[in-house]
Every structure is written in C-alpha cells, then in structure tokens.
Picture: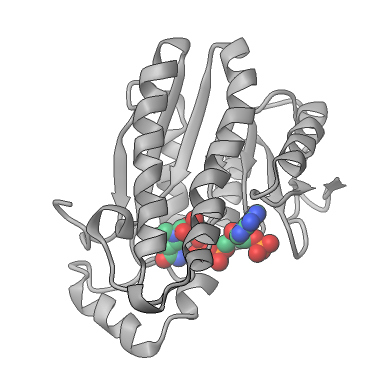
Length: 247
Ligand code: NDP
C-alpha cells in the first residue's frame, strides 16, 4: 500500500470510498482526480508508476484474484467499504482476425471483461451490506459499433454491457446501480500508440471533428456515480462526439 498525502486528505473520512482500477494514468487518472475534487476518498489500483497526490495507491493486477482481494482489504481498512467502483483497467492487442492468436483474444478478455467481473464480485459484497453502491464500467465505442482489428477488444467491451444489465437485474433493488460509459477516441497512451492513418480515419468519422480529453469522460463517470443519477442503471452512455451514434 502506498498512501500519497502530498496533496488532498485521504485520511479524512469525508465523501465516499471510491476505487478506480488503472487509476494511475490516462482516463482512469482523470476519473480518480474528478472524484477527489468532489471530496471523495479515492483509491486506485496500479501496476506501475507513481500514486497521484491525494490518493491511496494499491498494487493489483486485475487478472489476479488474490491481488484484487488484497487490494480491496487495504482499501476497506483505510477508507471503508467501496461504495463507488470504476472498472477502468484495460488493454488492446489489435490485429486482424487471421493474424489474431488465441492468446491475443483471451488476454484481452481476461483483462477487460473477466478483470471487471473480478472487481465487481469483490465490491458487491460490501455494497449489498450497505444497501447502496455505484458501479461504472468503462467500455468503448468499439464494443457495440465494432472496429476492424479489434475482435478481441470489442468482444470484451460488449461483454461489459451484458454484465451491467444482468447486474442491474440482480442488484437493482439493493440501491446499487451499474452503468457502462463508452468513450470514443480519447487522447491517452492507448490511442497515441495507433498508426497515424488509423487516427486520421477515426477523426474523419467523428461528427464532433476532434478527439477528446480524458476529463470529458471523467465528468460523465462522476455524474453517473452521483446521487443525481440514482434512477439510471443498465445504461450505455456514449462519450464519443457522435462517432457511434445509433449503435
Ligand atoms: P491507458 O493505456 O492509458 O491506461 C490503461 C490503464 O489500465 C493503466 O492504468 C494500466 O495500468 C491499467 N491496466 C492495464 N492492464 C491492467 C491489468 N492487467 N491490471 C491492472 N491494471 C491494468 O488506457 P486509457 O486510459 O486510454 O484507457 C482506459 C480505459 O478506457 C480502458 O478500459 C480502455 O479500453 C478504455 N477506452 C479508452 C479509449 C481511448 O480512446 N483512450 C476509448 C474507449 C475506451 P499500468 O499503468 O500498470 O499499465
């Protein structure tokens, strides 16, 4: 466990106990910072890098159930049961179907889909006891719109919609909501790795005519996890500048 008290006050028992997987960089970091600015007690899982100021950092790989268990125990000890879970950790391994190995497929599913299942299962125990909770799954426009070279990734991201809807039916009466936020093209390390031609192709099909920054996703995630959104569950909320419209 690494408690970073350089800024903010994670020891202070105000706000809600929030956990963001993969909160050390990119969209996850923006989400974590948004909850922190809201006055919540924010913990992030990370495998690499530093813990951002004001947050509790717990080392965990979402493909490893024992590491997730240990991470939750640390967060519960420091901040109390997780009331808001953001399943954000994700990877790509893009390639066309005929070149895609079975491990390209299963590794992506293991991280993006089974990884979400593992953290949701662990978090739901405390939420059921509390009779409240907010779960937000970070999917992608690729999940429902599809994308060449992303059979593995889009399958994993579409699967999150099934999780959110089934979980809503299982736990909706316990004050728990589960929603999907589906970003389009966001400027992060993940998209910076795409070839210039792929980036240009995306850009030409986005009605907004631009890519987005991570905080544009974070603002929506924070809102759907707020009291104001208590009657929204099992929804897929696009943050994609219109790219996937109608999907
Ligand atoms: P980044 O590649 O910038 O960050 C990915 C994050 O996930 C990192 O914190 C990384 O941790 C973490 N992570 C990856 N694998 C694991 C694992 N096995 N266990 C724990 N943590 C892991 O990606 P983005 O910020 O761009 O993406 C965040 C989420 O948003 C992903 O789910 C992605 O699919 C989704 N998304 C992104 C879009 C975009 O345009 N950027 C569009 C649509 C969806 P570490 O630093 O240790 O590697």
